Length: 426
Image (cartoon, rainbow, N blue to C red; front, top):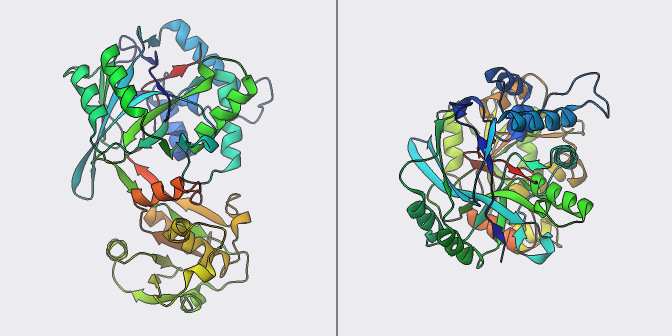
């Protein structure tokens, strides 16, 4: 159903950049100010200068992070920092990580996807987005007219034939190979064989694409297409596609840091939660606490309310979710852990309704588990809630119903690397 297109991507010129680990970054939305500085200092051609340029106090409409990124992009292309693929390609992409004592190898491929409104059902979102991020990405796209980082998409091919076809056509030696700062391995093979590409494209016609990561990038690209209103590569966006059934696909949780707008004593929170949850204090260490949460049944959460207070929460079996959850939502949406937390706890108990989720004044999202405890103890937040990750089948069910999970419901791991392939619009 989705229309996938091979691209003539730009890649770093190996004669100029010999070690890709020095010039690539994770996606911009996981880069804080400290990491941004580190990437600036790592190499003069680091992709950070294009994807996430610095902001300076004197910035104005004529000199700002977007204008500087566009000028740098033009300069680097003129210097030969990037080389253009001679033929249209799909780029086989392998990532290997260690997690939880196991090795995971995930396979996907770079290409482009034709931009379609969500209403067509060809491309389906799975979670809500934050408006300020889309404004930022639109300005960058308009200035640079290129995709520096891909959308991450999923498709439901059980046989994994697409990756097998590309692997057979790719040859044994990757065109690019490196380990990033986290020790994760990345390998890339451009596949330009038209027969192999066409076989893959025929298979992909059977499937819609679910956006796993990069909703902001997709929606920004769609808005840019509508603003341009002319044929060309701006009618597509770069994407990495991974099968939902790839054995290396990992989904991790994103946790919540909460500052209630109500007059709340965090020490009383466990008792107030007992109306809907079985609440058990936990006396062990934090790693053991998270492991215990992982063994809990559906609709279970971890709570840290400061001063060393850890509690495990599980929804009581007598609670009638259909009565307490919004009636205009599907059963699949009402059964998600994250929506139970947002509706019953954040909304009903702590006064943080859906109108307050996006501005992040009362709610912050984090993957840094130990740091979340420190921020509560420092008084930045009243408490932290820890979640188990959603399953792939939950993502597909909600997206298939035409609905979205709340913001930051999923964290796909590992993150795609920014800078491996660039999709210019010229």
